[in-house]
Image (cartoon, rainbow, N blue to C red; front, side, top):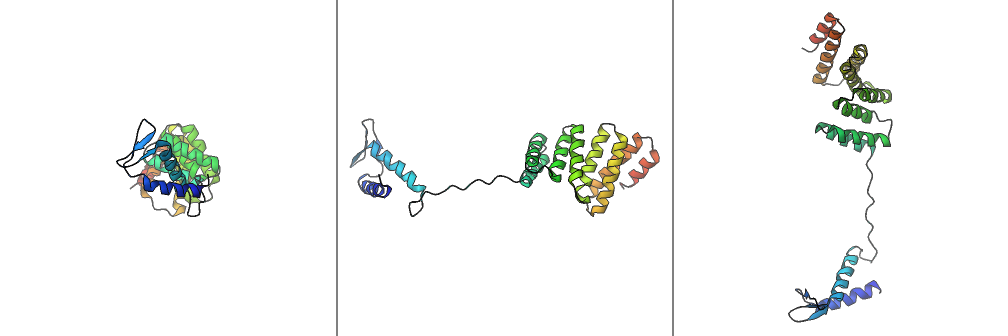
Length: 211
């Protein structure tokens, strides 16, 4: 049936079907003054729903196409999970980001943090190394190198830890960032590395940098 003709008919039917009409088992809906067959009311409801999905000219409205998240959207999602201590979901978000952009320094760095927090140090070292390899500036390199150093320290790879942390401190100073707590943390890790290597003078010197 032509939609406009049906719409007009339904409007006319509306004049004869008062509000408060109730459905009955006999196939009719009964009101205080008039009755109407249930099938007509159901058709009216169906057509009303269909019309609500059309514009003024009777053209069906198009639902907006969902926009897929970008790699950076997923990285930001991962950081939110990290801040909440939800490392498993954070890891999933960073891996989804890498599926979109496998050269994302931020995604590899986040993946390293999520893995390190789960004590998966070998995998974390690999992720941090990838982050450094795709980084083009000191500001995005010192964090992954510091993470690599921490993970190497946890695995008793002291020489590798010393190299990574020393590089991280140098890159941090070149970046011009002002994150004193991060710098203190790196020097504390470096002091521990020197102590484990038996270089107590260097360990003391690193500790002096934390004051």
